[in-house]
Length: 262
Image (cartoon, rainbow, N blue to C red):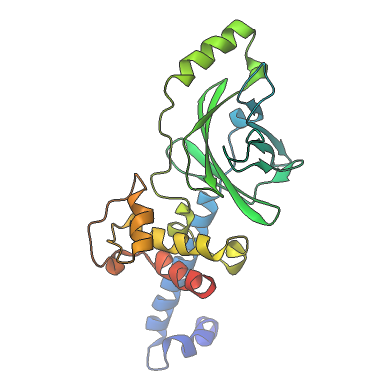
């Protein structure tokens, strides 16, 4: 009797023509789906390994260009960012004006981490890839389109100028392409989104976010805008006219949510 009372609230959801056993089976399946989604979200939201902590800069002798200071305070990650050298034509200048907490950190499962922030009301994102104790690659994902990786050095681990110059020579000759293999917003295919997750993105950002889900499955875009945009993404390969049958349950729900706000 107690078991039947427990499942009574679900009768309206699943229909009164089902037996108690059938209702129980459907409810358990629905609960498992919800738990799987929550687990995926929790597993995808990551903490940066401690080796990323510290101050990383593009030059250990001259005060120029790029700097990111990463600190872990009570299991929350704070970033002090200076991106660009003041020449507007060279790069969009980003200054956090003090430590800001990361909104979201994602483990890309390829050795890299994507870190998302909100600076002056606008979304900013970087991808970090740890190369060795004194070197990381940093790729700006937002606000500009995905850019080439920049080498940053942890000067506190470099003993003298000669060692720095050797590292600089080693890594300035050729920077490997550490760009994302699944777009700027991989989380849109991996975890259920809430309205609050979309608040900091522009309508254009959301448009790209939604269409990236199609692009990851090889959709051949029909509009000139999307065709042009994704043709410039090294990871994209258009193969199919219809990919809707390939969407996961998470992707289908996220597409519908994003549509409402883009």
